[in-house]
Length: 334
Image 1 (tube, rainbow, N blue to C red):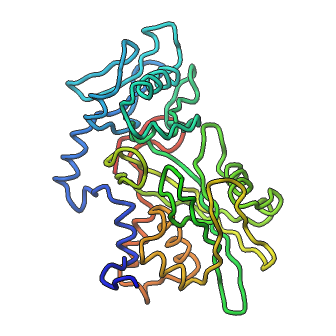
Image 2 (cartoon, helix red, strand yellow):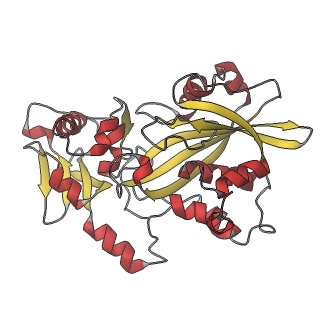
Image 3 (cartoon, rainbow, N blue to C red):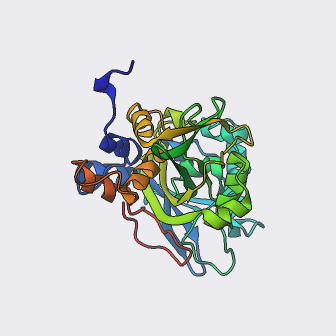
């Protein structure tokens, strides 16, 4: 039986995921951390732009940079400089360096290499439209990452119930934890809804026609996460992230089923059952936030029943520290 003293409040769940300090709450700690990081810059049409990511100092020391990189220790800037070689792609420079780091076993996080690219948004260049990073390496550069999460629910004689999958124990990240019904990372060049359709088929055996006809876009959830050991690889890496959120109400005859090796089983739980497992810390941290957003939008979590309502709602939509659209950089704010 779970010790009631160890149960997490809804605000505790937010704090677990959105755990990078806010300037407003602790300016000294926020400035100490930000000033300790190297910043990722990229080459533009005329000069460098950025920053686009935060890189920890020990990562800079361990990365096998070569002559195709400008590593400025005085100003703590790291920039791929492909013009120094015959390669004219910053993506290729980043990839080659990461492959070398993987070969040298410099970072445990690269053991989970996916052969999947994540975009670095906000960079403006007529020469190189999409600059990307191997998914597993994205926290090494601390770039914004993106994904899609959908909650599938139904109504029964006893009220609303949610479909909740349990992640396979052997998954490299958060193995054995509970998840949102459908979830996945957004790859370079992929639109959120198309990503949702792909993930729904792969993970939950939900047809494209069903998802196109019934899934509803519900905004985003965003947070700035300092990764722990359960995320896979080294603890302390940075992951500012945005999830595109969807809901899908289905009839009782629709039952998600595992279609790959990423999900062990799907449970159909009442809202109270979901809340109980959330309180026990059994959900993947960002999935708990998506569920809180679902509860807010469906009137389950309100100012009347949750004393930290305003804090929770505001924290579900954190301004990310780097550009979020492909139209050029903005000032870094977290």
